[in-house]
Amino acid sequence: MVSLVPAFGGVPGGPELIIILVIAVVLFGVPLVLVAGAVVYLATRSEDEATTDESATAETADDDRIAELEKEVERLREQVGDEPDEVEDEGGT
Image (cartoon, rainbow, N blue to C red; front, side, top):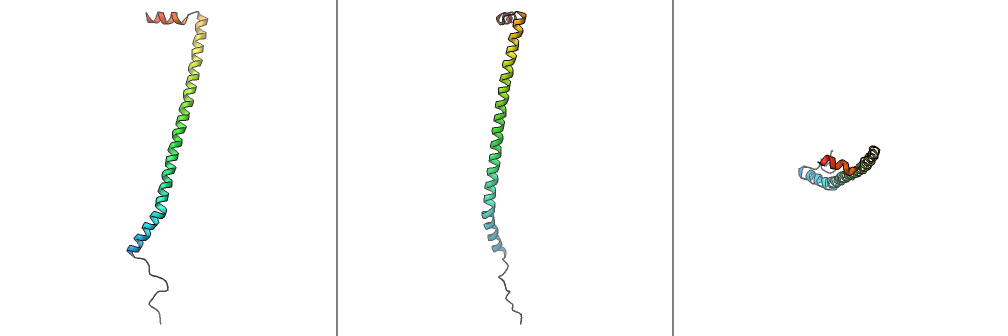
């Protein structure tokens, strides 16, 4: 005769599946969200540092370029024989 009791336990129904889903979310979902948040935070932080480094490099390059242009202006003034004060006085009056 065939037994009416299956060889394995019953298949979980609605409440059991909800409990299993909650346990899965707590065990896997929360850590995944925390890891993803840490990755996003570190990625944006490194981008900010890279932007800061690039802007500092750009400012240094700008400062070097300004100093070079000032030297060029002084050299040209010496060639022409103008003094810086004379040029500023003539332009202002």
